[in-house]
Amino acid sequence: MKALKYSQAWQINIHETPALHCQEADDVIVNIAVCGVCGTDIGIINDNYPVAIAGTTLGHEASGVVTEIGKNVTKFKVGDRVVINPTFACQKCRMCLTGNPNHCEMKMGTEAGVSYDGAFADQYRAKEAFLIKLDEHVSMEAASLTEPLSCTITGVDKLAITHTNIRAAVIGAGPMGMLYLWVLHQRGVNAFIVEKNSHRYQFASKNLPPNSKIYHDFESAIEQEYGTSNSQIDLCIDTTGHITELLISHLAPGGKLLNVALKDKKATLDVLKIADKSLSIIGSIDSLNNSFERAYALIRDKQIPAEKLISHTFNFSDYLSAFRTVGCDINNKTMVPLEAPNCKVLLRLSNIN
Image 1 (cartoon, one colour):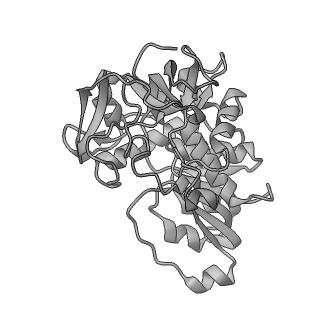
Image 2 (cartoon, rainbow, N blue to C red; image 1 turned 180 degrees about the horizontal axis):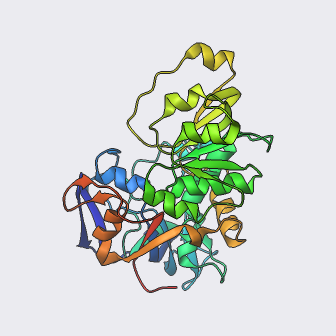
Image 3 (cartoon, rainbow, N blue to C red; image 1 turned 45 degrees about the horizontal axis):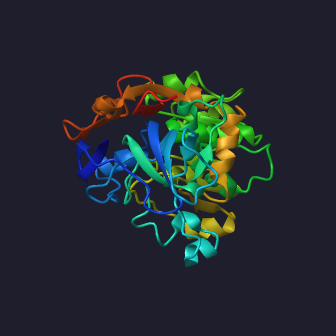
């Protein structure tokens, strides 16, 4: 089979590898239909998030069809259409037993697309407990957004939103920013979104939740939304990591900043104001508290318009173009400006539907 392997920064190539088979009783082999390009993949490739093990197959936002099951598997049969939860947790370590399975101490060697072979490949070896059977009306493409949506739900859960008449903003209109905007909408919060890049702005402006607005600049957005440039805001989700200090300076008493940007950035914080204004600065990553199952339900029930957020689908062999579309020029080993409106980009591994 073919698999897109990571060797080192800026070196990923399709390799021919042996076909997969079940090794343990709860294993399930999935033939991959589509797999999404994630910011984590880009960070691994450009060395801004150097976590992957050399020789690992990248990719973790995938759906496909079951082709083989282990002897103890009862929930699935060959031919079932499934979506893959790539966040394995052992359920036994201290992190798992204290409610943080997204930080399972057994992550090394089990994290799909990082230390365990992921889903930019013809096949993926999954565990029975980490699959969901797709309803007939759910497309492979829509299902592939379950994983990033589950991460979004995890983050919104951490915000513990108790009022819907709050001032809220999302920074960055990439796939995660758009998903956060839609999940806030689904929770009854009307937020605005900020995106400087004209191509991302163009795509996002046509796919906003009802009554949401998009702006090029945070400070001008604050002024237009609330009357003055020094207006305060109750909740801000930052998917970029570039303006942390500015956002904190605008937080109202009791305000919350959620950072989900995996960026090597530093910020200076005023400790006195954190306490005096009862501010919350929160980080979030991966799926937690059944968020993967809840994410699939939102896609299944069309409460989140997953397919509207997919801007491009490329054939597996054209992976270089897929990554170039999101600004990652592998051939020239550099990040480049976006050249067209885009949001979520998928690779299609097979013609399975």
